[in-house]
Image 1 (cartoon, rainbow, N blue to C red):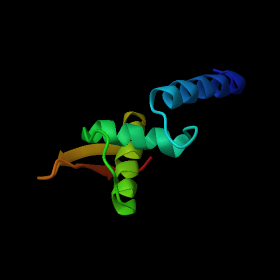
Image 2 (image 1 turned 135 degrees about the vertical axis):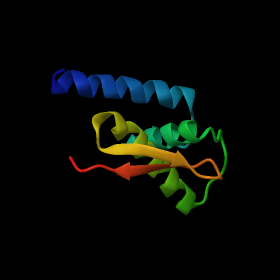
Image 3 (image 1 turned 30 degrees about the horizontal axis):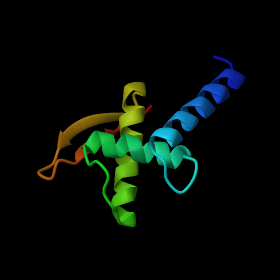
Image 4 (image 1 turned 90 degrees about the vertical axis):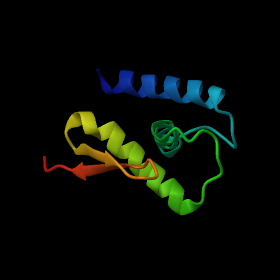
Length: 89
């Protein structure tokens, strides 16, 4: 996929998600990752403190990069949080 096509697809996705999840403004990469993380954790809409948001973003990044061999899922802890191991690539 060419760079221009990828950018157009990304913009289309951001518009769709912004319409589906209205908030203070347009979504960006962090907003999309926050959606991925909350979906992965099955959290739904909840107010989060900054440290929880950072952990949710980490879960999202690991989830997105796992299929590409950057992380490997290890387990879920007693609170339901997934744990990943960083792989050397």
